Every structure is written in structure tokens, then in C-alpha cells.
Image 1 (cartoon, one colour):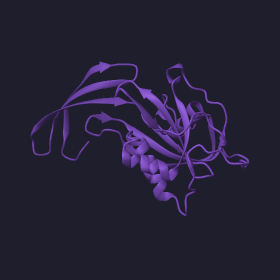
Image 2 (tube, one colour):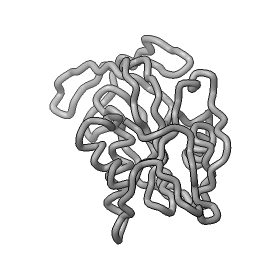
Image 3 (cartoon, one colour):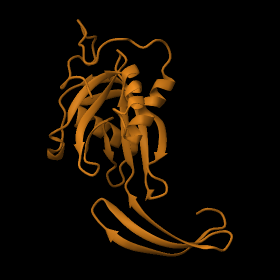
Image 4 (cartoon, rainbow, N blue to C red):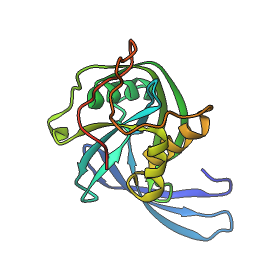
Length: 207
């Protein structure tokens, strides 16, 4: 609670399988009253998988609520009492068929702080091995694309990537990356993939 603020009452307006809607009556430090309506939901994860050739794994899928097909880093919600890193590894495996030798936190972000009490944990995964995905039936339309990191950064600037967690994960990864990035077309397979390096992936260039 913010210093000097107090919650006078908290009412559960709606409870569903994925979120709770609450209405709180509060009193601020200066004595003025206020009402806040917000949602509570489980924490989420997004994981940016970066291969040895400087490409990132992005998935394209239809997202009902916003009515758009979005380009995203693999991710989803944490299960009950699930560790966020474990959730990140699970989502990466399920949506993209990727196992990672190393996974490190990028940041923890607030999804929509004025209207939602939930966090999103962002991770960077490296040392990748690509296998078969394990998507849920609701993810049947999902496609995996490999995009050079430099191109993913450009996509954040020109509107092809608009989801907040993916934007942050791409830009923080680009900030962390040192040395020149490989310049090549998206999804162009190497002539001889190194051991543990993703080669051909399902799908074509994202966009």
C-alpha cells in the first residue's frame, strides 16, 4: 500500500477461471476518497529465444480480444504456484518446440498498472535446441518464425510488433547484445547448422 493511503473496503465484483475483478474504496494520504476498479490475474511470462546466428524466435497467432494477428515472443500465464522461470521454459517448449541451455531474467514489468494487478516476467533464452512443439488446440493457428534480432528491433519501431512484453524483451535484448549482429534474411537456413543451432523452422518470414 502507498504510504499514507488506506483501503476502506474491497469488493469482488466478478471471479472467472482466469481473473478476478475488484472494486476498492480507498482514502489517500490527504484524506480524499477514491474508487479503483481493477483486475487480478496470475503472473505472465514472455521469453525471447536468441540463437547462435543472432535470430529470435517469434510466433504469430490470432488474438481474439484485440481482434488481430500478433507477432509475439512465446509466453503465457504461470500455473498455480509455478516458478516464472519454469513457466517460461514450459511455454517456450510448448509453443515453439525450443529447449534452452540458459535462461536469464531481462526484467519484471507491470502489464497495465492503472487497471491490472499482475506482472509479466521477461526472459532471454540461449543455447537453443529445436524440436517439436506441443501447442494446445487453441494455438492451432500459431506459426513459428525466425527473425534476425536487428529486424525484430525494426519491427518494434514500424508497428509489426505491438505487444508490450515482446517490445520490451526485444529492445532489452538488443541493448544487452554486444558486437555486430549477423545480417541475413529471415528464415534463411545455414548451409551446415552447428550442433544445437536451429536450422529450418516452421513458417516463413514474420509480418
